[in-house]
Amino acid sequence: MQINSDLHVHSKYSMATSKSMQSDIMAKESEKKGLDLIATGDALHSKWLGELEDNLTQIDDTGIYQLKDETSNTKFITTTEVEDNQRIHHLILIPSIETAWQMRDEFIVKNMDADGRPKIRMRGTEIMDIARDYNCIIGPAHIFTPWTGIYKSYDRISDCYDNRMADFVELGLSSDTYLADRIDELKNYTFLTNSDSHSPWPHRMGREFNTMEIKNLSFEDVRTSIKDNDIIKNYGFDPRMGKYHETGCIDCYKIFNIHDAQKLNMKCDVCGGVIKKGVKGRIEELATSDVPIHPEDRPEYRYILPLAELLSSIHNKGVMTKYVQSRYERLIELFKTEIDILLNVELDKIEHVDMLLANALKSYRNNTLNVTPGRGGLYGKVVYD
Ligand SMILES: [Zn+2]
Ligand SMILES: [Zn+2]
Image: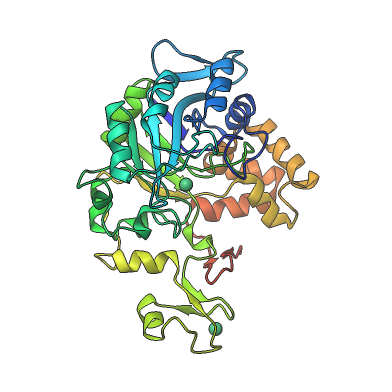
């Protein structure tokens, strides 16, 4: 079967997260979104684990959980993100809540419950050792993020893990398959696209997600799906929208090639402002090819924007305004899930409800988005025809 999964989120016990990041709201909002399987997040935090035990029940012995009151069809998989002693983030999928309790004692940490995403005083490879001992699935999170992604410190993923391969890499909001597959070593990795959401609302949950082929809904079959790269499609942001995508001047926003910028000592030749290296610049440093070379089993990467954000940008109203939210609810009432609206519902049906939305969706679905890329701290912008 095919499922839509979002395997990286945070609970209300992580820094800067919504108070509503609790399992019942997460499950219900994710069902609206169209997600079948979501991460619990923060599974090394004792209070969160306690709440998960109170509210969730394991389905047979699958390592997959659902709300005890069965008010949502969206299921959970036990996960955590940890920060290592180099400030690199790793995503760990854990076989069960019980295993998560057992693992807690293995990590060297000042206070495991200080943050849903704990700061572990160990190297990445030591964290991998523990994860492997407990039969977890582990890989680096949002690999190109300048502050906490693995590529800020290493030129090769396996250098972080004592020459061992991770089980996957997570692309993160700032990259896509076209950029990542310019780096030769990544051809051997399954790419995951997850939201890293800090709030349960559907413009955050599943803003990136995976469609994966899976035998049954179980932890072991999730493992197999990732191992065999049975990801059917990755969905996520167009990285050009990020505010540090291109290398650019932080004052006049002129875009530079990374090598030219370095020749200028990262000082703008137009206005003298500081040039900030973009994510693409880092990828160009690591790239072994000017164009992406996709391995045969690489799934297609499709750009999406959360429906509420799309409505917000085409109607020029805030995401949380009544205007946008009531339109959103109306669309969900008519067409069931957000993912269906973004990807599948016939455009002529949507035209009857919202002409502008149908037009915008057309550019996304046909991959003909016209984007002015972000740089120097200025977000990228979609130009709709
Ligand atoms: Zn992270
Ligand atoms: Zn400038």
